Length: 161
Image (cartoon, rainbow, N blue to C red; front, side, top):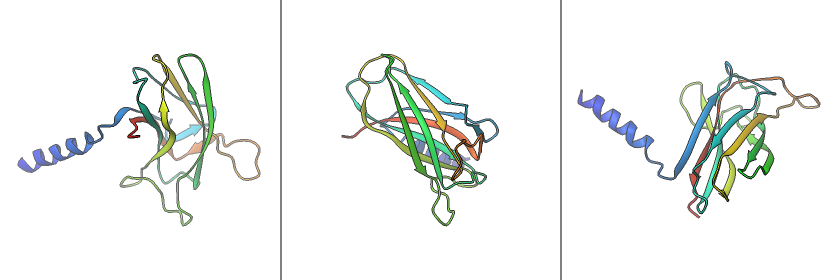
């Protein structure tokens, strides 16, 4: 019993170590398949308008993800209605096929830089939308159903700068 309590205390301690974490949320894809028309949407508010923040897109993938890179399109909508749209590329595996990211077993989690030292200028509701933008080489049309992405999330942390 003492070992179980010690293990539980250790897990709680490790989970609560990030004092800079402001917001974290995940959404699962449908059966580990992400359709190109399905945006993953998040809303957040009550963000310190004076503090600088770092934003991350967090992606969980399994071994059925068939590519080394991941292309994403993001839209960050401010309370004023202004929208910032970005096209992003992230490396998910090494050239030898070894997965990047953290995790044990078949799921790897990649915490990918999105915005560095961003200041949220006004209070209100912010909306973040994420789509995949994967295409096969030489193909104009995007990949309809991207396999192997199990969850997509975002994190906001206080910047130390």
